[in-house]
Length: 400
Ligand code: SDX
Image 1 (cartoon, rainbow, N blue to C red):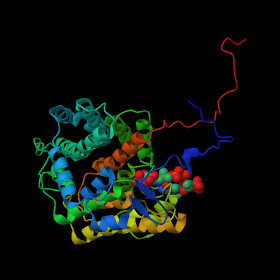
Image 2: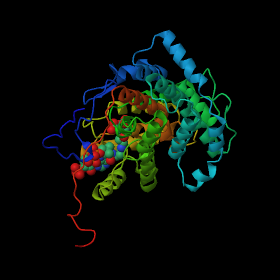
Image 3: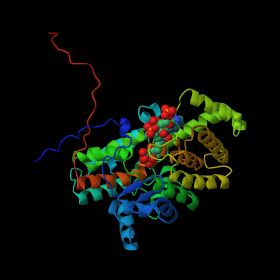
Image 4: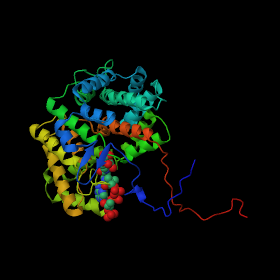
């Protein structure tokens, strides 16, 4: 075996900014366009369903109608959770109430338990990985739904089947969470949000899954790591944090303040105190996130239709506030919103509980994670960068 020599002069890149850490055939994140396996995101959002995109990412090509029917059937058949996971979810109420756990932690633990119960958990062949990926994809919405039922003190919806087999992935997720079937318009918006969230090359959580897979560890473990990485507010947790920030602004300036200097003053104070505005900025996109306008337009259309949403709050004022915040951010900092900003507004408009926004991101991103885990396993090399030491000079333990 030949050892590869270290690069002559390795350079320090904080946060790995600008470093090409590997290759991928799954996704291309560019300033000009976002592509999943050769298909552009506007094209997918307008013409594909989430199930089709999930197939594209997992199986590697656009599905034929018979392939899609087979895939959809496979997913529907795997929606129900094992009783051990349902039992665990039933016990989560006090943890969620006390704040020792948040929904993202519960999803992470459930995925770990699913691994413990999966007969193929230790198999990392492509075929076993694909089967496990489909099982996880099918079950995450059920975890979210059952958990929301526990939070709301409602009977768990469809524990035996994990939903209504006639409903799409997106519609079934909403049904499981609330017990009522969404309107086609709401289901469509959630479906598109899942398409937009599905994949984004070497983002922090996907890179985490590749690092874990690169040690030849297993799919469920890599996914649990991905969920932990996605949870943070600098990454997927920003969709919840963005909505919480808008609520804070609304509270501080009052409804009459939307569109007035009061918001400018709030923002100036945030800039002066070097506060990060949630849902803005991106490591790669410097001229805007391709996904954000797609979701903003759809979310706003929903808000315009509903003067009162199911949660009982007038939705449009939140979009008006969000748009004012965006204008100030662009004018003062030249920073654009990322996908999490319109996502927060859109899910809020539909009455989805804020702590479930990032778990819903998981329900979609598991497809991208799984594709990357399989790609890593197919052409593996351990991922192990080097660090530049900046600790104390050499000392003697005995003082001699
Ligand atoms: C996602 O990577 C992906 O692809 C992720 C994702 C995916 O699909 O997987 O797209 C999903 O994670 C979207 C990002 C969600 N996060 C947020 O919305 C949190 C708020 N955003 C920021 O903290 C920030 O923009 C990051 C974390 C997204 C990116 O951070 P970087 O690339 O490390 O940039 P930085 O923090 O070093 O900022 C550079 C400059 C700084 O100003 P200066 O010190 O140079 O004067 O831009 C400023 C920052 O202060 N800046 C912000 C800001 N984002 C950048 N200032 C205020 N508010 C912000 N949101």
